[in-house]
Amino acid sequence: MKIKTRFAPSPTGYLHVGGARTALYSWLYARHVQGTFVLRIEDTDLERSTPEAIDAIMAGMNWLDLSWDEGPYYQTKRFDRYNQVIDQMLVKGTAYRCYCSKERLEKLREGQIANGEKARYDGHCRCDNVQKSRTENEPHVVRFANPIDGVVIFNDLIRGQIEIANKELDDLIIRRTDGSPTYNFCVVVDDWDMEITHVIRGEDHINNTPRQINILKALGAPLPQYGHVSMILGDDGQKLSKRHGAVGVMQYRNDGYLPDALLNYLVRLGWSHGDQEIFSRPEMVELFTLDAVSRSASAFNTEKLLWLNHHYINHLDADYVAQHLSWHMNKQGYDLSNGPDLITIVKLYAERSKTLKEMAESCAYCYQDFAEFDADAAKKHLRLVAKEPLELALQKLSALADFDWQIDTIHQVIQAVADELAVGMGKVGMPLRVAVTGIGQSPSVDATIHAVGKTRALARIEQALDYIKTRVDQ
Image 1: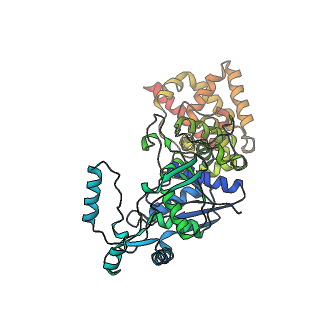
Image 2 (image 1 turned 90 degrees about the vertical axis):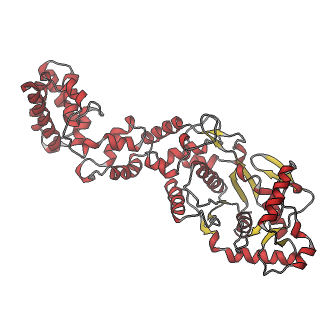
Image 3 (image 1 turned 45 degrees about the vertical axis):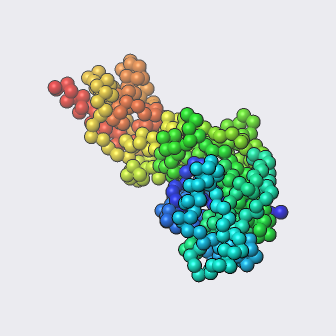
């Protein structure tokens, strides 16, 4: 049997971390067994579904590189198919027209709640007398004739055997008064038509599963296997919300995370392989199994995600990291032709950067000039005592040929200045760092000066000397 999974988001908002984890688990399982992964957009909620949400879902899937083999399918383009199946069910008697008014249903509900009963439809229109006394031209919905007796039993791939009595399930509306089919029914027909064998989704769908199984049985369709993943909680044990980091996936891109870090973090939110923490994408595909997915809820920890991101910035190929960095550099408005290549930036700043956004902000002086020095850094390092080291460094750096503008030769110049003046390297390096960057922190001063470039570095040292002279004059 060819294994086929699907990710079926509703486009009523962004692709959040819970949805992304579901997509990842479905994708990994399909890839692990050399199966097929389907993307389906469940947009039957016509009032809440938006093109912007669809775009956000697509952007998130593409950024995470969770490629699909089929789709995207859109439920709104399959209404004719759904209604064809509903009409066949009406003929077979597995569905029926319901003419109950909103007033009757509300009164029924209020009475049930007052009596401490579960609010559910009472099957009033299911009897033949009602059907014979009304016409299909009258306003009505169509309900599924759910079995009255017995139980629905299914073996959840994550949670084990689950049983739900049919008496707990009422007759689900499968077509609204306006003729549009409903979510739970569309899902069933889609899974049937698309030959989905494994449905991996959040635990909030557990209550939908017995209803969908009953409809599938009524259609004579094969049943997929179901696995329901536990929810993700905040680190305080509460339901995940924006204050915990439950934002759209693309916000993580905007905040400077690599997709590899987010995927690695998400796969571990409910799945494990021994004590291993770091997983490459091929390792995830090779090792992922549903029986290793936990039934317990997982807690989202931003610090752990940040740690992973720092790891990946430092351990992935610099060229790959640079490709993702370019988005942030453009966001900062840098002219990338006016500075070092991005691979150089990655190699220079990776160790001190937890996010790509931080990296892009840190290297601003490599692409843009600054008008002022950081006040604290200048007060400490651009003093009169720094004048002689800066003048000598300027003289020696100016003498370097363009082809000799290398990190090693720049380091040798700094060492030569320190030796000649009989001072420590810090007495030369720190004034140079502030002069060339405008701030008090940077990667190694020789590599930083090299990255800034000869013309710009020499001009900034002169600018620092003018600043020192101004301080002395005052």
